[in-house]
Figure 1 (cartoon, one colour):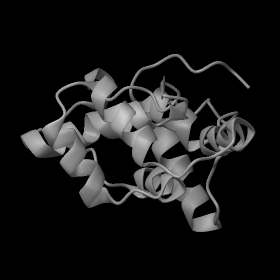
Figure 2 (cartoon, helix red, strand yellow; figure 1 turned 180 degrees about the horizontal axis):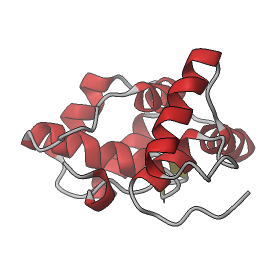
Figure 3 (cartoon, rainbow, N blue to C red; figure 1 turned 30 degrees about the horizontal axis):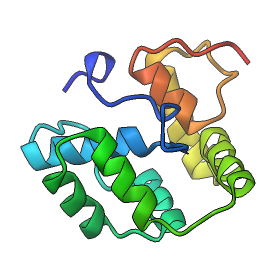
Amino acid sequence: MDLRTSFPRSMRFKLEGYVHLARMIDKCRAVLAKTEGEYIYPCPMDDRLMEFAGVTADQFTAAVKTNPSDDTVAKWFTQKAKAHPPAELEAWNRMMLNRGPSTSKKQEYFNKLRNAVDPSRTDLTAWADLQDLEEGRSVPKR
């Protein structure tokens, strides 16, 4: 699968107030259809969202499998998810969007991926920005 012309929505796209939820639905559907290519579901970012919500990968996969639309999956997710005050959800969303490599080894990996697409983008520090860059989305200079 060519990452630059692929389907998953940006991590920034929100469903029911959650960043990454739409992307996780896209990847789960692709796994179920056996069309995921290079994408991984569940990946560490998926795990973070599911842990925050108190939902397991098996539960989420079953919900995607049995619900035909994003809206029904998103509604299921919010009904199943642990309740979080709006400020806590927004803080979590910001953390997900701003999260960067947490070790020197992960930083090296991040730099390798970034440099393969655009080595001039040394301003990028977050995984969400790197995903958008890899998938051909516009990423503003920081």
